[in-house]
Amino acid sequence: MVKQRYVHGTKYDRLIALGYLTKEQAIRAAKSEVRVGDPECLAFAAFGLTRGSKLSFVNDINKNLLERKLNYSCEESNAKCPGVSITIKNGIVSSVSSLSET
Image 1 (cartoon, one colour):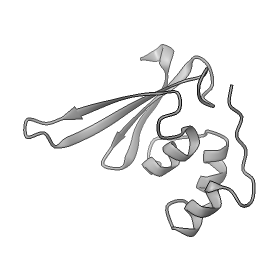
Image 2 (tube, one colour):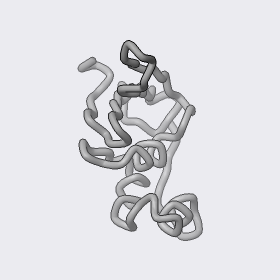
Image 3 (cartoon, one colour):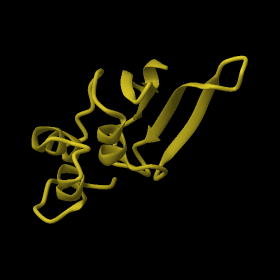
């Protein structure tokens, strides 16, 4: 399992400086605490863009992106076992569930 913690001088400080996350959000990202309503940046900071993930897209009839669903396995990311599924709509986390619940 990949361990992550908030350390000064990390990617979290850069995301704070760029205005993508608040300090409180960065602390939660370091603890992998993603909640409904969080910005997608927090989810990616918590679990990574591709490491241990399976990504799927939902498009409308005109091929516009409606949502993204990311499944992170606990073997290849810092998600708690059995893993986590995160759905993102319009840049905001709209659902978070255990992979066993999906």
